[in-house]
Amino acid sequence: MTEPQEYYSAEAEASSMDPHDWGRAMALAVTRLAEQLAPEDSEDIHASLVGRDLHLKILDDSSGVTITVSTAPSKDTEG
Image (cartoon, rainbow, N blue to C red; front, top):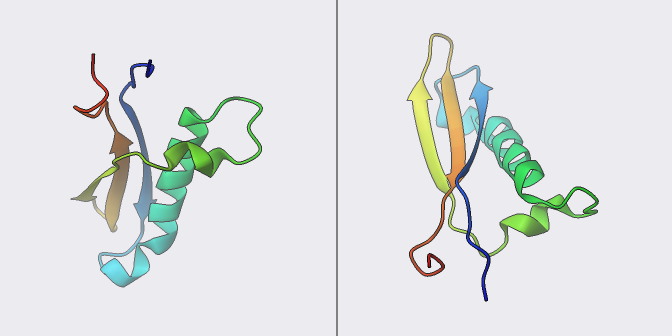
């Protein structure tokens, strides 16, 4: 039986409005999300993201953008 998934979210800021400059912020947000999902003693936290649907949201802020990456229960695994 599959355990129910919860909603998780992480964000990071990019200091540019140019999408070519957003890579580090996206990577940081994904890493923060993986840290929330992985078991505490995990050696490979990014494995916790494999097979999950991730949602990306980009919002303007005063000096660039805020990038939010989230995951929520998928309709396939909800009870």
